[in-house]
Image (spheres, rainbow, N blue to C red):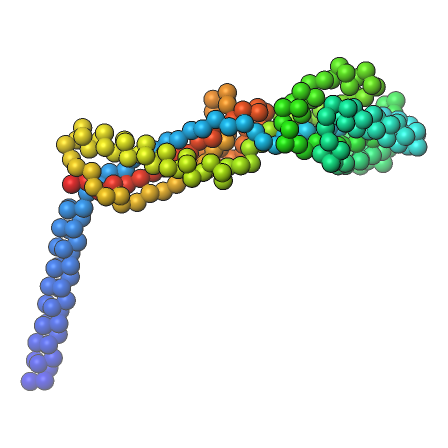
Length: 249
């Protein structure tokens, strides 16, 4: 008799759980059918001017005498600094970077033939200035600098002489996000009008990455996955895309 009662109770519990699960499933199904929304994207773009110029300047000499080479590289550095000062670059904008000496005899790689000179001495200066237009102008005065007896070595010519950066993104972010969100809503309204539905409240909004590219650059250097900023042009384009969901009825 006891076993029979236990069986009845177990069957009752099973049926109760089954009915409960069925009712929840039906409710969720009805809810999913009733909740409808659309996803749209909004785009905003703004042209800005770089506010920081970074110019890495390297001079290089070859020599067989370290003492003479050291004096020569120092003389070249002083001439370069004096030239920059005369052209309106402030002294606190000129930074001494690396001084490297390569002894071709002591290195562990390459040919034993060291050529005519044993030592290579390189000196690097960096100009960091918010006066980007003046830096651009001075960086193009190779002929005048050559007349002073200084030859600039550019081992990374593909990067450009001067890197131009825009560092005030936070100042324009709010306005650009507002514009992108408005454009997203315009797209949603157009869709709702064409689809004969009514646009309802905002469901969700996601901000994409801000990208900064040179004004005349056609391919973005920073995509949705991130990347580097184009640095060769003073004039930039800042872009942002937002993804927005709206309920419809």
